[in-house]
Image (cartoon, rainbow over all chains, first blue to last red; front, side, top):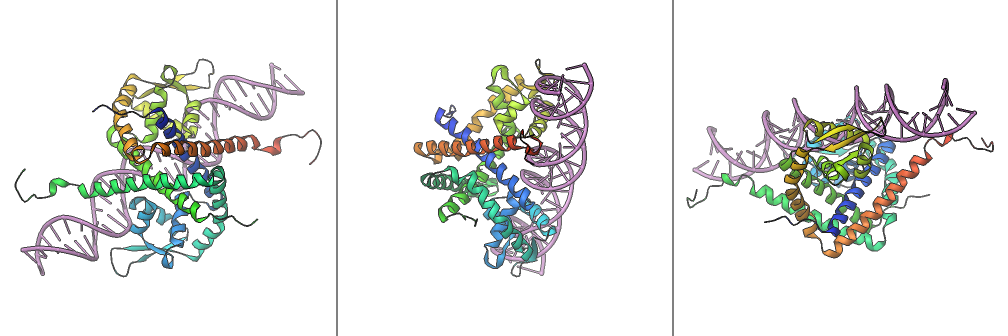
Length: 171
Length: 171
DNA sequence: AGGCCTTGGTTCAAGTTTGAAACAAACCTA
DNA sequence: TAGGTTTGTTTCAAACTTGAACCAAGGCCT
């Protein structure tokens, strides 16, 4: 089948999106690096933890919420632990598991950084959008995210299908 | 002034956006790494070059179009040059300048990779959106990008203001 | 219990990004 | 035209990300 190239409208949207997402992540990373000494992802880790029951979460759950790989998370958590922002604890139910627990210091750092962060998100993003556009952005983003997560799940399910033994022998 | 926190609608939009942008970049990076052996940014460099007059562009212009730092570009171009995808040439007008020129091999690689890339962009993004949403996405992205670029320009202009000599001596 | 696959996490090397510093050419301006 | 600033680009070290490989521990069978 011949490629269905992007229409001019799609091209414009795609380019605008790429520029916007790059610039936005940059702006946010820069602000947080300045004011909190950590990149956006690291701040997000603290943020997610702070909203979790008992301010702690298992590594895999944390990775899932943040949509990042476990390996990336391991590295980040190691750094944050070194900085005293969180502690690693053993999981009581599952001896394999480890849970990240926000420390009081981590929580304090988060509280101190939050206003500046919110202000940046506001001035970079929401101040430029109408209320209607905020709703549109949510719907669009949700649609994309949902699709990609289904893809991921499907891919995982289909993984190494050649290992499945079919009951009727058809190669 | 007390912080204006995000409204629930804004929070939802922000979280959905973050998830979507992470997942999307991941999907695209993975596909291109698989099929073309390079991350998205590197592909974009080739792509921008291929659409430029004579398939060449000065480093700064390239960085500007891609919204990345010059230093990041230098690294990427070095790799791409090593791989034979492009060549660095001296700029005739400005002896400081260097221009990146797409090689025939680079163009060929690009042509081979393009269909798969477009297919991924389509299935990850545009297939999930209505025509209307594509338009909305463009407008939203353009608004964000425009705002952030103005900010960047303003910040650059205001840089080291203490060096400016005011005509009337006021401190 | 003894295998075997899966799951939760970490480790390691290679690749990439960051930001500040270094350089050199170009551009003032006195 | 010499000195000082700006502009274009690279360099360097430190930080971060990636993906594959690894190591337990948990869950099934049989």
